Every structure is written in structure tokens, then in C-alpha cells.
Amino acid sequence: MTVRGDASLAALALLAFGVALARQGVAPAPLPAILGALGTLSFEILAGRYHERVREVWERPLVRALALVAAFAGAAAAGRLGVRPIASFALGALGTYLCLLVLVVTGVLAPPREWFGGDDER
Image 1 (cartoon, helix red, strand yellow):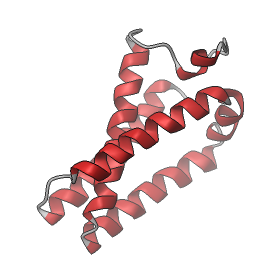
Image 2: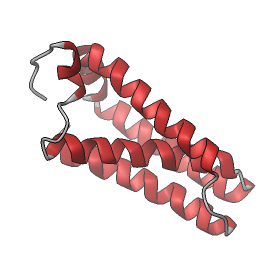
Image 3: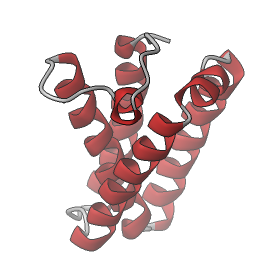
Image 4: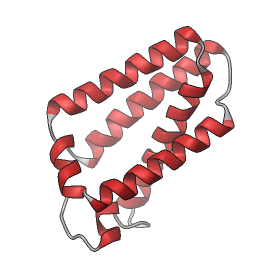
């Protein structure tokens, strides 16, 4: 999948969780949002270390579709049940992921796969 495709999926999921919080009429909770951001950074470091295997799995259309369905289901549940921490965690995680994409695409930050000396093109 392309960076644009990854960004589109993340943005759709981010929008779904944002709508869930708006439906509750609340702002994101800071601590879960920070934990979501840290979770994304941790995952990207780990994924960078094993970028070939992660990419191989992520390139499967079923995996991407299931990830988006899971995000929409989680957002719907959070919106309906009023689970502010879950939606806040997701906003922090997805927002951080999109920020990382921007930093990588603009060349400010090297792709995670290069953090460990890899040279695989995505």
C-alpha cells in the first residue's frame, strides 16, 4: 500500500473516533491520548525493526480491510457506549501516526525502517 493509502485509512479511522467523541460531547482525555501516541511510537519502532515482515502482512488486502472495520466498530462502540478513554487513545495513536507520515514524507524524519540500518524501499 502507498503512503497515501495508509494515510487515507488512518484519516478515516481518526475521523470515526473524532465523531464518536463529538457524539458524546466531550474532548479527548489527555492521558489516554498520550498513551495512544506512545503506543504508536513504540509500534513504529518495532515495525521499523521488522519492516519486511510487517509490510508483508500489511500488504494483504484482508488485513487492511479488517483493520478499518475494527476501527469503525471500535469508534461506533465508543460513541454509543460513551467510552471516552478508548476514543481518546485511538485519537492519540492515529494522530501520531499521521504526524509521523508527514515528517517522513517531507524528509524531516527518516522512515522507521532506516532507524535500524535498513534500506528497503516502501
